[in-house]
Length: 429
Image 1 (cartoon, rainbow, N blue to C red):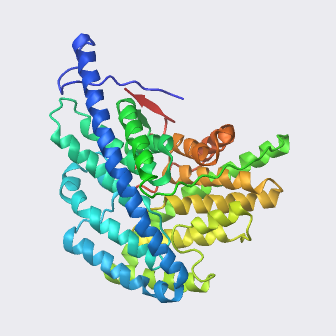
Image 2: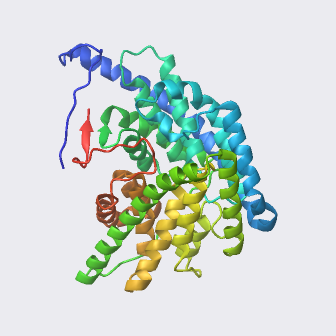
């Protein structure tokens, strides 16, 4: 692993010597960032809880009355696009606005996008779209961090990036109850191929404070600690490696097809209203005929069925994969993280059944590894798996996620993501 250490500048001029003043300024900045992170964490934690309560209500209504909700997905798509067109003509989505080089665009659009993305996510789930939940929360947290940085009169040129990372980490941590994974997710996604060391401590404060606030505010934390003691053998290791490669390829394929189908749909159906309505109609038809909405929403039902020992289907991961790609490519809102968990869990269970391996163990490994492969992140899925399923399985997550990361084809669901092809990871201090 090649590490590249870059010494930061306090001013835009030539690098300064590391004297006492340099360290004092850095300490003061870090304290200010941590105080801001605490504020961001409290606000985003409360937001995550409220946002997920409404989302859970929408999913419950759809689950009770699928034939009254799912047929109207195409109409909800028309409404979503109308809101974007009316209040924010840039259809670049959410996460892309936080990447370097998008400052001018995001300054004008990200604030107006928040209510549209929140409302769009709710109605996407209510009417049967196959999507996740994270985009609205991460956009809110990232925007909050960015706005706070603009209010600070710091000479640190990285203050906006640090607080944006902090906001994204706080949103992710409060949403999924995985603060350690949230820190690395925000860092790895916003700074591909780098570890932004100055952002780690504020992001940690934001993520843990958000997680601490979100649970008393009503956000249920999903944890599942399986009691497994797999017998380590040559066959077991071989199957583990084969599965990890498969997880990486499926995650990379998801990211590749998401971008490809998005472009193809735009070429085939230039009119965005017709595009989103046609895709919504197709998703509705397939969703109703495929077990009455089994593959609608986040996919948590597939995860709980798999881990709970209920009947599952060999094709669960394929159908969830295809419907999620189509939903997000057409322009529906929500994100992809929980559907990726669902796809990975189902795929892991299938590989375990084929090779006669522990189903639950391979399911939880697939849950983390497919997510990491599709987002092109390495450390985030390792810690996410450990936080949700238990740190005693950390060696398994470590091995599987590294292999999946290598075999994902350097693809990511985030359109502005550009990772150095020749380096696995670099550290920026």
